[in-house]
Length: 361
Image (cartoon, rainbow, N blue to C red; front, side, top):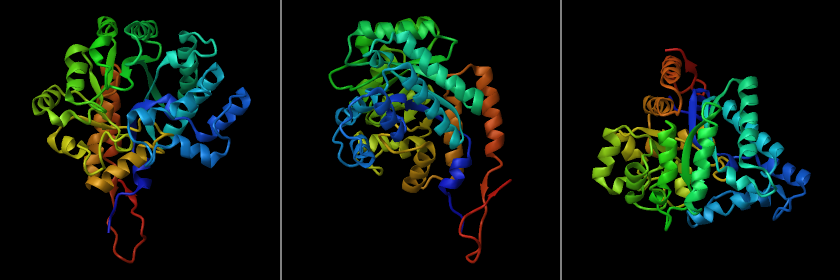
């Protein structure tokens, strides 16, 4: 009997378009950086620290989920810490054959010890450049404004995007709690990046209804939507997103953990895929959700019965939705499509090896 395994999915070329740097550190790196920087953590016991960081079953909401970031941010206030975190994230992604990763974070959350926002951006880019040079993984950086901060701060992030355009920064994002913090307040920042022909996305429809997605698209001009879990509640808007091929950056494990979706079965992503929306699957926060791209795809296969053909289509959607120049993207999509075509499941008889082989089709 043939089956889709994590071993198979790990071999497939992939993207990760929605991945937060401050939510994707290695646990051992948090401990090591804290010791080196003399940062006081709630605990230095590895198991106990993981319990504090991992969303698991104890998180009640998105706001609750976000509290764990206080711990990781405490060790990400130096250039060395930022550069290391960025390099290791890219290395971890490369280890599961992520060919292109977009790393997002808010520079203004890393200035507590005196770093300038531009130094923060430079440090992260150094780590990613080193990973690309050593491992070959392609990357882009998305700078995040925070909904709960004043619009002047968002404008500052937008100005950084303009300054670092063509130097590794590929997009602007609006992140943070949606409740009581509408996207339209930050319209000026979006307008600045759009005026400078820079890509933008926005967390929307995660902890608030479809109006949040509407604002992100129609008031702010977002080119992609982060999460979009509540989009299905407005059929008209759903069809607009589908008709205009606006990609959704879906992060299933995270959505279930933050209660954006009540369960895997209640998550709308299976409907989105069936309806034909441009869905991409992503990790969101590798540490907090204890996940990888391989694991996310495998869990979707387990819960929704997605075939290998469907998983390949979603992988291609990831490459098509990347914030990279069209010519470069078209070449990469062609290359990845050709490579994906070589993977298929071998069918085994009952007395054959339990694990399916990877065969050239």
